[in-house]
Structures are given as C-alpha cells and as structure tokens.
Length: 497
Image (cartoon, rainbow, N blue to C red; front, side):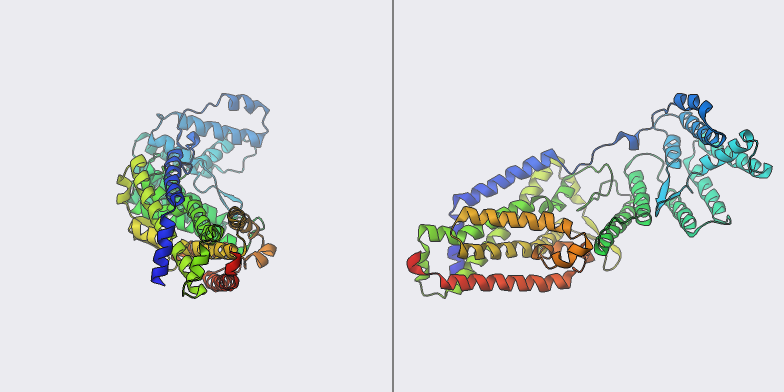
C-alpha cells in the first residue's frame, strides 16, 4: 500500500499542472490581500465631531405644534451645547454618545439620554402653558442640568462619568419602570463603570470602539427580531453577538489596542492586518484548495484511462480496491501539502503587505462549551481550522474518484463536481434557513461536511444539524461513495481501457 501511494504521489508531482496551480494560488493570495475586500468602509459619520447647523431647524420651529415645538427646541438646545466645545474634544464625543437611542425588542431605550430628558423638562415647564411638569421637578431638572454643564466645563471627563452613574442609579429607583428599562439602566451603568475602571476617555480610539461595539452587540441581542428563519439560525446569530460582546469586553479589560477580529469582524471600522488575514486563510482560499482537490481526484483515474496507462497498473498483482484506495490516499496527502503551502503563502504575503508585528498577538476566541475567552498560538488555531476543514476536502475527493470511475471525460467530470459544490455550499445553506426546507436539506452532505462550524462549541445555523448528526451522515456518505467507487473500479474491463 505504502509503495503504491508513493508511486501515485510521484506521478502527481511530475505533473506541471500542479505547480502551475500552486503558483496561481500565490497570485490569488497576493491580489486578494492587496484588494483587502474584508476591510470595512470607513464611515465618517461615526468618528466625525464637526459643528452641526441648527439654522434650518430654527426656521422650522414656526410651523410646529406645541409638542413638536418643544421636541425641536430640545434638539436645537442639545446641538448648541454640543457646538460650544472644540471639535474632537471629549465633550463632543460624550454628548454625541448621549444622543444615541438604543432598542430592546423594538422598544426605544433612552436611559442614556439624560441631558435631553432634563432639557425636555426645562423647556416643557418654560414654554408649555399646559405643562405637567411641577415646579419641584423643574427646579431639580435645572440643578441636574447645571451639574452636567459644570462637569463638561471643568474638562474632567471622569467627573462627567461619575455624574452619569449617579443619575442613572437615581433613575433606577423611579417607580413604574419596566424590566427592560431597568436592565438597560443597569447595563448603561456597567459600561460607564468600565470606562472609569479602565481609564477610557471619550474619543474614537480603539478602546472606545470596543466599548461601542460591546454596547451595540448587547442591544442587538435584546432587540433581535426574526424574519422566518429557523430556530437554529436565530441561535447562531445570537451566539455570534454573544461572542463579539465578550471579546470586546476582553479587549477593554486587557487594554488591547489592536483589532482582534477573527473569522468575523468585531469592530465597525476594522483595520485588517496580517493576523486577521492569516486566521481567515481557509475562509478566503477554500475554493483554491477545492479546485485542486477536484482537479486531482477527477484526473487521477480518467487521465490514466485516456492515456491507457491504467491497463498496466491493473495487470499488476494488487487488488483493485487497494489500487483505488492508494489513489485516494495520494490525493488526500497532496491536498494536505497544498493546505500547508497556502497557509505559509498567506503568512508570508500577509506579513509583507500588512507587517509582521500583528502576529505577536495570539488567536483570541470564545469557547461556547465553557463560556469563556480562549487564547492560543496562531499556528495551533490554523492547525485546528485546517483539520476541521479536511473532511470536506476528503468527501469531495471521494465523490470525484467515483465520478472518475463512471465517466472518462475529465473536463465534464470537473465541471459537474464544481457546479454541485457551488450549489451545495452557496445555495443550499440559504434555503436551509427556512424551517420547511431545512427538514430536507439537513440531510445533504454539503450541510454536514464543514466541521469548522463546530469549533469551540459553536453550533450549526441549520435546524436539526449538530456535530453528532453531521458525523453520522458524513460517515454514511463517505462509506457509500467509497463502496460505489470500489465496485465500479472492480468492474472496469481492462480490454476496454
């Protein structure tokens, strides 16, 4: 068996086409890294602290009803307060954050909009003859508002944060609050305490982006809505938010000033570096490995048939199933070599383009099995990711070998396999998001062959699919393909080839 595998490997690596495909893969890696399509678009809206004009808003005041007038007046006063401070000052970033509404299950949560609420009470009392704001509440609002102005003018962001925490705690003791509102207040207090504890001044640096995304993912979980997807798809989405939220908190607590995005982006304006690109090697270049696998496994039989060299091979004193298995093993070993080659190429190319410094930071991920952050060497992670992808390449090889035993037309066999792969990996997963269709699609091998979806306790987004069902279905499909391939190969007539 070993001798047969060695012979097959020698024949494979005598082909010029293999080296051409590996060379082409380097070109693709270089082009992909230079284009950098994973880089999120920089949106000026998020980091801009330019002056905001109120001219149009003030002109429109005359057309407003009493209720609309007060709302508009509060908005104008809030913007004027914002404009009083220098561009890119902590005050502007703080006031910008102050004005952002959040949502929990479709309900607007404005527990953080303390200054706007105070301005509303003040303007309502002063401008609305039918106001329901008492003189006592008005006086309290004026005092609290002036306290905020004092902290903003003192240029001490820590005092501003402490005042926010104090007022949020007071608000929490207010009667008639819903559970959602109490939860939102508690969370806002937590984020302000994180800011104080880790000395995060208001800005748009990496730590502030982590804090923003920590909040955004929390509220994404609270406001998550379904649009007819399966429960499994919803669970996967919520798990993604949970992982991102915990990773953001980890980055804050460890004062990380690098983007620790892994397979998915964590920061909105993430800066792709060599480390992130390296982690996504198999995510980006899956198709290259699959094309090599299809080409090898399809041609390993058909080329020998077309060149009639298989006649000599079949007359040797080896059982045909051993010959076929040796070809399969040679293909698997070659694919493993190709995987290593692509990993090394991405490591070098990414390092040259983005700089090697980012490789100093380990893979930082979330372990759903133990609900904790995990940290490991980048190469160890790539090894795990590669091993979890290998079953997919093996089943493709087995399928192509079977096609090769049935059909001697190489190009047709490759085309058919590639079409099946594209449909199975791109179209079927989308169909599987629908509950009624997932009842059928969960049994397709293409929804069960990628075991990287289960790394670190992750779950499949297809209803009824889990690691145990995938292992069982994978074993069944692989056995059937190998059995049919061996059966067809045993039936081949030497004289006809």
